[in-house]
Image (tube, rainbow, N blue to C red; front, side, top):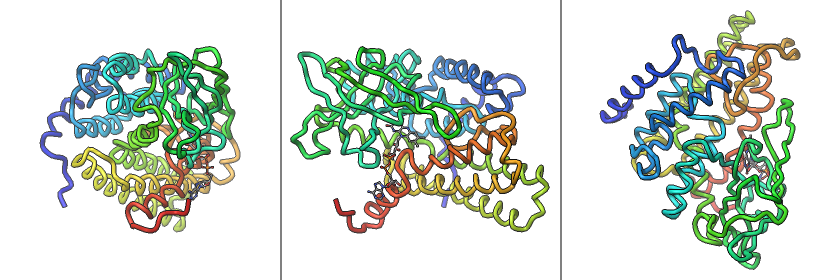
Length: 405
Ligand SMILES: Cc1cc2nc3c(=O)[nH]c(=O)nc-3n(C[C@H](O)[C@H](O)[C@H](O)COP(=O)(O)OP(=O)(O)OC[C@H]3O[C@@H](n4cnc5c(N)ncnc54)[C@H](O)[C@@H]3O)c2cc1C
């Protein structure tokens, strides 16, 4: 097995490294070394730098403000940014650039691409994801948000929930039911709606850590232009599914880097706590090490398929299941190493609320409590729960019978 990138990746990797040398502050130690206020200010400035140098939307056509580069270059960029401990934009860029941007490139009309892509790249527009509802999560085909046409507008009524960073968005992309008579997956339309129009209300939800990153979004006769449909009217299911693939993209390359950095912090925590001589703790740390190494090889395998076919196959479900379940065990180990100290919150809290704390973060109890209480717990829920991933693996990879409807 050849575990190397093709030679054409080397030239771009050198370019990215030179860019990082020129643009990162002297003595840069990673986002984890900053306070949350500093990290917030830095990530805003850093996003602008990435944008000005064509590093956002790297693979998109130049005509819409993209970089016109290959998928391989995108993977190299993600890997180098992760190694340099800098983010690929702001937290909202996951939904705005990665999800909606890629979806517009694939499904948008010429007019939609020219109107929306430059604005979401510049950060003028920030899009959040309105898929889930109180009665439609894993079973997304059951969405109940209603939309009907009145003249040249759609009128929306209903509710979304678990909208990450809803208060930071300027717009929301939603799945709405537009044909009640059709079979459930065929009556859904993918619509864009601004969040500042009359009839839209965003309500934050406070979670376990005390933070309010999630929102509920209520629609009461909210209106959006008729041409803000992405894909076909009643054909939103195909658009919705292709968007979910972009949630996983280059993660196969970056996850092993983040989880390796977290494991190093965990080993340092064991040393600081004087537990590194404990044979049970050592055994569990060694287990974590083997898991992260396997994650790296699994990542290479998925990337090889992705770069060859341009699509992420059902193997991406193995990766999602693997890292999210690993992370809960690693986070529990951190709690055990901390022991009674874990009852007292102290020090810096994680800046981001997904997956690991930033590489280079100090081993504060706040860091591990937040990672353990919320981030690692939610990993087996968002982007498809573990049970749903197992269904996909069973049906699409192992060829088992489909689950009864
Ligand atoms: C951190 C985080 C961020 C999120 N951000 C967003 C966002 O920005 N926008 C958005 O729209 N949503 C978001 N979500 C919501 C997320 O997509 C849903 O929570 C997820 O799809 C699961 O849906 P549910 O919560 O309704 O659980 P349910 O679908 O009700 O599932 C409940 C339980 O039943 C199991 N289950 C369900 N169906 C099956 C089945 N067929 N076979 C076996 N078991 C099954 C599930 O695995 C789970 O254990 C976010 C969630 C989290 C945790």
